[in-house]
Length: 173
Image (cartoon, rainbow, N blue to C red; front, side):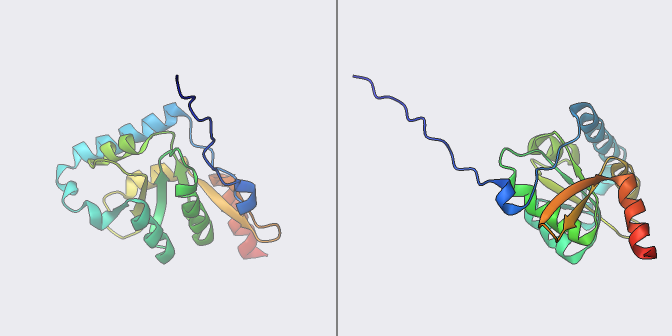
């Protein structure tokens, strides 16, 4: 006699209860282009691997700590199966007005481009004399800002160009 397999569903909290909508990752072609750009930069600058942690924060907790301090110019997140893992990063980035680049790569692909085993999130530090400054500026072109709306407790993403215009309007008004 065979046992019937359970068809129980895994609990997934509703994102609407949290007031967050999932951030759409970039298309696969753009994500692959960004991965190649980072890999090419790492190959051209072989000596940078020793000082990598001074210029880049790798990992979910390290990026969350850096976002709380506001020390990043841009963050990059890999696509994960459970979206709640990276959701708090989007909220922190929205608070600090730091652009987010969500890629349709898995954590292994993103990590391999930086020369590590895997990385769900990567934060490029905003420092003077940062060798990753050119890469960070290129990533900002593909990034989105997260806007927090306190009236109805929601998060929305806005394109990079409109975010800059919105910030200017808020400063003028």
